[in-house]
Each structure stands twice: as structure tokens, then as C-alpha cells.
Length: 220
Ligand code: DX5
Ligand code: ZN
Image (cartoon, rainbow, N blue to C red; front, top):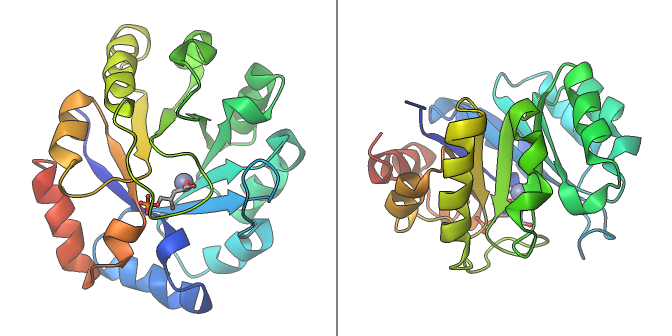
């Protein structure tokens, strides 16, 4: 029985007060925080990179969940590992040699994860499941916060959950995009362990209460 985790996406936080936001998350009993790294190429938006994460690592003991939405992420894995990423997630669509990229993340000492865009089938990662710590199912097209959950993602989570039960029961399933307390019960029932939430979290302070609302919805 895996524990339910909420990973708030800083994309919807106040970028001018990142240090305070991280502190507030810790005070609200959050364990994870989700960093959306965008390069303006893989996705049509630019956010932040390893230097910002490194600067904020010093004053935070949160688990840094780093979602790389960048082309050829293999070029920057060492930078993000050295910056203090606890988990590095790369997109299956962004690298030609996914097995090599994933092995490199593990070699660098970080937890390794692969993200799939909504239209990418599970077969893209099926052979890698035994060596992954987590798979991220994107339930919106990445690039922006505040988009609507794409309904067919639910079926994809169910199918991945069935695969993971056979191939790697310890592997976590993360869902990112349009997650709310309203769809949390169904997401958890489908097999999600880690939900990312940007707009539905940061838009509803205080954080401790909002965290409790998600936990309750998850039956945790
Ligand atoms: C989308 C990002 C998400 C995003 C989620 O490109 O990967 O992490 O911030 O935001 P919401 O929860 O608002 O859909
Ligand atoms: Zn994300």
C-alpha cells in the first residue's frame, strides 16, 4: 500500500517569493515540491533552470521533484543532480535514447522518472518500467498551468497501474495537469500515488488547509 503524496507545482506560486513559498509548504506539512523546468522549445514557455533550484535547495528539506520539459535533457542531467534534485523526470518525447538517459539519472544518484504527453502511448516506456522509480502521466499538454484535465488520461492511469502491479509494484504513478480535490478520489482509485497541483493548490490558501482537503479527497 503506497502512501498518497501531493506535489504542489511552483509554476502557480509567486516566483518573486520562492524562498518564502517553499518555507510555507514545509510549514503546511507538504513533503514534495514540483519544479516545472521549461525551455521554450519542447514546450511554448520558459520558466527556470538548475541555478534557481540550487539557490533554493540550501534552505529547504522538501523532496525536490524536478519535471524537465526540455529537448535533449541528457545535456543537463548532471547540472540538475548537482543542484539538488531528488527526482529527475524526463519526457519520453524529448530524447532519442531514453534507456541511456534514465540510467544516467540513476547513476547520478537521483530517483528517475519518465513523463508521457497525453498522446504518447504507454508502450513507449513499457520495457523501462522495471528500472523506473516513477512514471508521470501528463493529463494536459505541458507548457502552462490552469488547463483542463483531459478525460482519457484516467484510462491511461488504470492501464499503467495494471502494468506496474506486474512489472514493478514499487514504481510510483504521478499525474500532472488539471488535478483538483474533485477528481482526486477517481485518480487515486485508478492508481495514482502522486498528484501534482498548481492552480488548484496555490489559488486556495491557506496551504495547510488545502493540503488537508487533497489528503481527505484521497482517503489518506
Ligand atoms: C504543465 C506543468 C504542470 C502545471 C500544472 O505544463 O507540467 O506541473 O503546473 O498546473 P495545474 O495544476 O494548474 O494544471
Ligand atoms: Zn509539471
